[in-house]
Length: 195
Image 1 (tube, helix red, strand yellow):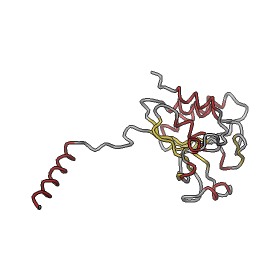
Image 2 (cartoon, helix red, strand yellow):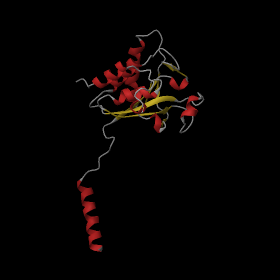
Image 3 (cartoon, helix red, strand yellow):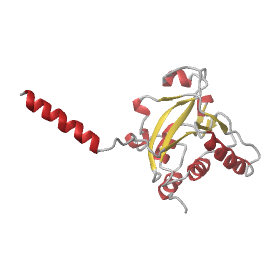
Image 4 (cartoon, helix red, strand yellow):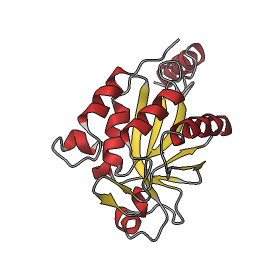
């Protein structure tokens, strides 16, 4: 029995030595979009070829691990935000940001569609300074199209995933309310990286 156990351990060790460990996030990039209610932004981003994950959550507030009730009180400073993990070989940060701008109203503060409150403030938050440079340049171009521009642009200070019932909400509730229209969802499906 001991010999069998030793043989199994040896086989396991050899198999681990032959197969290199793969990182799930290897080569992936992450950006955070706050576009009002996170349900529609999450759904739209998940439709983009090259987006590997989109997670609804709460960003840049003052409270650790807040729940929805605390966030909607307006006292925590959190924004309903979607963490987007994407493959930059398939879709660029510029394309994702331009899609985001096309789906929101960048001229209003603390509101998108029928959703009103500081948690619905639009914003783009980044963890990589180089991404921040790209975001600021794209925002400058977008700002020139409008008489006023209220989208926050800032480094990410915190992100907490929202409760499970918020994740993939529009997949679970296809008739659920969303301030983002079907045209934006269709546009998301068509994004492909330009050479």
